Image (tube, rainbow, N blue to C red):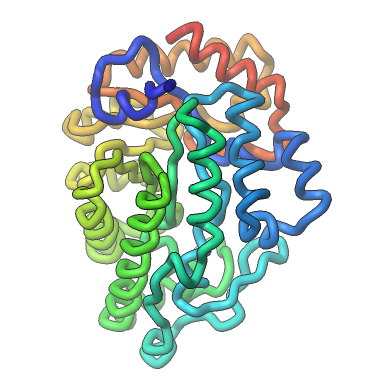
Length: 338
């Protein structure tokens, strides 16, 4: 078994940094585009055989050190009884904006309400046969709440921030329900075979430090603490969050994802050197010439040697226009330079 990723997450000595990529299964791979030519996005992640197939593609093609389940962070919204469509971005039929809306949400058992997720994980553990570890994931409660209130993606999430600022008690009630379903959802993923889990707090960076502590970190930590007894590595990633690092230092994750806006060494200092760091190549670097990619990779690998532990990743997801050749170059460079 290639267990570099799991050992690095646990601060064990490793010969080189492991590498996996956010959105490594996706539009940059021709194998993925072929599958998507036959089915829409919702059908893809809701069909266990197909979700497993595209999850495996970057493992086979790129040689990454971990697989991450192909799914979407809005799946728990379905487990709460909401209807989600993709046109192409996520659209909720009925946004959740009032106390009455929140009372209608049902905290179900995810194995019953969204069984396709766990069927895909079980297939993947069989197909991977321990070649590399399998990562499960969910949106952090704050980020899922942002989508539920706004009803779709947004630049500023005005409706969501209005709720936090103007009706904090209602916001907390919503976050309580989302936290409950997220705990159940990720625990079920671990039972189905996930060997690590990541919480994506994509929209936490929209908040100031006071709101972040009250509405984001508080609930992310509850999820992480709930999962701690399951014994798998726990990763927390907040995008655009350099102003929040001193607060993230109180996070209960094992690994903190860092975007490209700050060096790994400075991020580690501001996090009190308490965590393994994951990151942090700017995804746009992969659009540059090969020699520049190699130079940037070498710099990050070197910085990673100064950390308590390092998992190489991008600072956000792979861009659709990224060439497969540059993805292969990236993975090869990390393995060779590390």
